[in-house]
Image 1 (cartoon, rainbow, N blue to C red):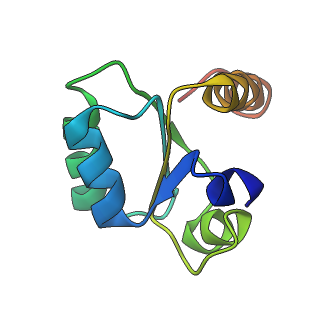
Image 2 (image 1 turned 90 degrees about the horizontal axis):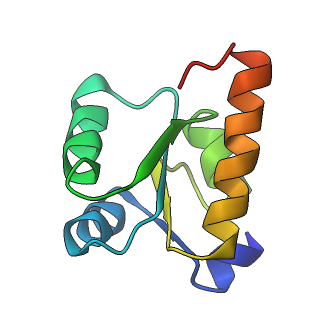
Image 3 (image 1 turned 135 degrees about the vertical axis):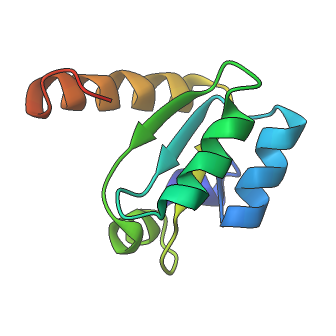
Length: 101
């Protein structure tokens, strides 16, 4: 929530899509309960630049983590926060999911 207030996190489907189109995203987090069609749209845009993609939590939990209502996606701008969160999410996936992304 603090990173959101500091402008390091973008949330809301349209805002995230716009940021992906502009190329200002380092890390994309998709809610685990996002629809397949929506996930495919986010992934297609993210594939055009070096964006790491993680599926994490559900819409309610992702929104709560940002101090917002439900969110399907969140994007982090390049910087130390994105690097650190990427490292921690990778560690999480390696521990709980056997390395699956």
